[in-house]
Each structure stands twice: as C-alpha cells, then as structure tokens.
Amino acid sequence: SAQLGEAANGRGLGIDVQLCSEVPADNETFLARNFTEQERAYCSNGSCPQSSFAGRWAAKEAVIKAVSSAAGTVVWTKGAGAPLNEIEVLREDGMAPVVVFHGEAKDAVEKAGVKEVKVTISHSGSYAVAMAVTQ
Amino acid sequence: SAQLGEAANGRGLGIDVQLCSEVPADNETFLARNFTEQERAYCSNGSCPQSSFAGRWAAKEAVIKAVSSAAGTVVWTKGAGAPLNEIEVLREDGMAPVVVFHGEAKDAVEKAGVKEVKVTISHSGSYAVAMAVTQ
Amino acid sequence: SAQLGEAANGRGLGIDVQLCSEVPADNETFLARNFTEQERAYCSNGSCPQSSFAGRWAAKEAVIKAVSSAAGTVVWTKGAGAPLNEIEVLREDGMAPVVVFHGEAKDAVEKAGVKEVKVTISHSGSYAVAMAVTQ
Image (cartoon, rainbow over all chains, first blue to last red; front, side):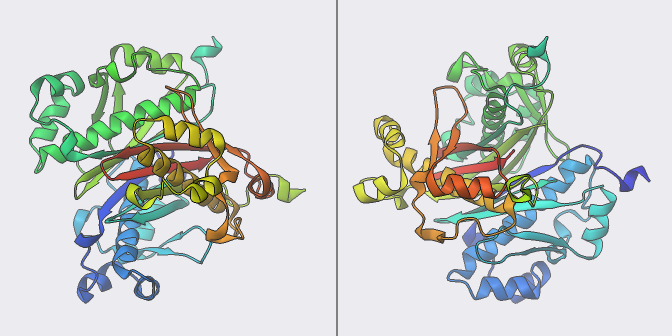
C-alpha cells in the first residue's frame, strides 16, 4: 500500500547533542534497556565508555527524529518510554556506523516508508553529538 | 525564470551551535525582533525557556546557512542585521519542527530557488544545536 | 570504470564536534601539516583564531566521515596519521564554505565515486561543530 511505499514527507533529518555525564553509563538496568549486547561490548571496551555510550545514545535519538521527520506523523507512539535497544548502531574501525532496527521499531520504520537511515557520531570534551538522515 | 526554478548550487546544508546563556531570553526587544508571537508562547511555556529560545535561534541560523549554501550567492543581504522573526520554526509534540518564511525572507528564499527547508534541534547541558537541509 | 562512477553506498554524511582548546592553534608544525596557507591566513586574521582553526578542523573531520560513509569502504587508509591540509575549506563572507581536495585525498575521493562534498561550520562558547554531506 501507499503507507508501505515512500516516506510521506520526503527525506528526514535529525540531530542530537548530549552532555556525556548525564548518561548513566554504570546503571546496568538503563544500559540493558537501551543498548544491545553488541553495543555494550563495543562501548565498554573502548578507551572512554561514558563518551561511547553518550555518542550512541545521541545517535539513537537522532535516528528517531529523522524517521519522524520523514514520516510526517508520530512514529514512536510510546514517546520517551520506548526502549532504545531496538535501534542498534554498529560499526567497524574506519567505517561509518550502520543502523539496524529490531522489533516494534523495525515495524514502525517500515510503516513510515523509510528504507534506510544513515548516522554519524562525534564527541569531544564533555559532549557527544550525532546526526541522522533518511535515504 | 531560471532564477525562480531550481537552487543554483544543489542541496544546501547548515549547522549551528549556541551557548544557551548567550541568548538574552529576558530581553523583550531582542525577543520581539527575532521570534514570532507563536514561537515566544511555545518557548516561554516550556520547562526551560532559555534552552528553547537558544535552540530556535540555532535553528534560524542553520536555515540561513542552508539557503545560502543552496543558492551559491549572498541571500541575506542585511547580514547579521536581519530580523530573524521572518524565519518561523513551529512544532507539535512528537513531530519534527516546520519552517515557515515571512516577508523579505520569503521573497529571498523563493528567489534563491529553494522550495523547502527541513530543520532539527537539540539541546543538552549548556548548549543547543540545530541543522537544516534544503529539499 | 564502475569504481570511478557513483559512490557505492549512496549519499554520505559526517558530523564532528571539537573542544576548541584542544586544537593547538599556536603549534606551527601542527598548523602547517593540517591547514593550507590560505586557510591559515583566513583563520589567523579573524577575531578568534583558536575557534576558527577548531571549526575548520571539525569540518575536515566531518568531510572524511562523509566520504567514508558514501564509499562504504575505508577511504583514508592512513587513519589518524593523514595530513589534513589535503582537504581545504575555503570561504567568502556571506557565502557557504567550499571544500577542495588535493593530492592523495583528491585521488581517494575520486576513487570512492564522490563528486562533491558540502560542509557547514559553527562555533559558540568552548566548542566548534561541523557537518558534511556528499552530493
């Protein structure tokens, strides 16, 4: 159907900035709810887990905004209550991060007509930023 | 004419970061010059007016950069002296913000061949950031 | 050949944030390695060279990420060791910045199938941010 075709509102974009210290990177319940096992392994093994988790958190928020922007409707109906581990951000060294959707997030993104989302992440000093664009 | 058709320089993009405390959110003259009544009502009624005004300010600056980038010419001929209330950033809960142009800004954007600008905003800690892309 | 045609992975994007004080703007060896003569003249003559150099540094990093995102492969094989003066960011007042590639960077970008990269820069308070998108 048309709903499963093109995004209603064209290309979508999202940005997010995050004060790294606000992300509770040592709260296991928070981490399990919002990050996949693979994400947690990657972030925990880096030189600065706090910054890595903040960057990925910003990436997930940017992806939500980009998909909502493309859809032109409310896509995440649970709002701030949605678990973010359904939006997975993976990467290999020297390559751009890749976004993979799971569960209800996957269904919502498909229903919104969004086929691919690209994301990019950076952090420096006390902040992490990320932006996402739907293709 | 060709000038009223496609933007000369393709898709345009703009980013802006703003230290929230630098935006004089209690200066009525500044606010009236740069924000519409609807924007002022939205920002003043939020949980943190200072951050909301800073985020919208960043959004307006990002929009100016994106339109200039698409046009490939100087679009805002008044430079820093232009009133920013001609670039209105509206939103509804759970939806992406929408940009509406008024007055001379509307004319300049049309003349530059730009048909639509999308914008996204975020703030955390002491900073607000925004980015804009012309469609 | 196909390799010299379209970017393998579609449109690419990159963002970078930089704590301005971390950029060694008074280290001549660092500056010569990473900025062209024209960039150094522009940044040194501005009202705040530290912020200008940080903004341009962020722009170059964002460009590298955007090209890598478009290519879908490792483009900068030297990693953090690559001299950034091969990615030049020029601008005129009131206009968007322009990216020009030189030397090995030029070859790598062409090989990746990327024809143009747009970039936008901002700084405020202690931070500079930039984003880049391949066209």
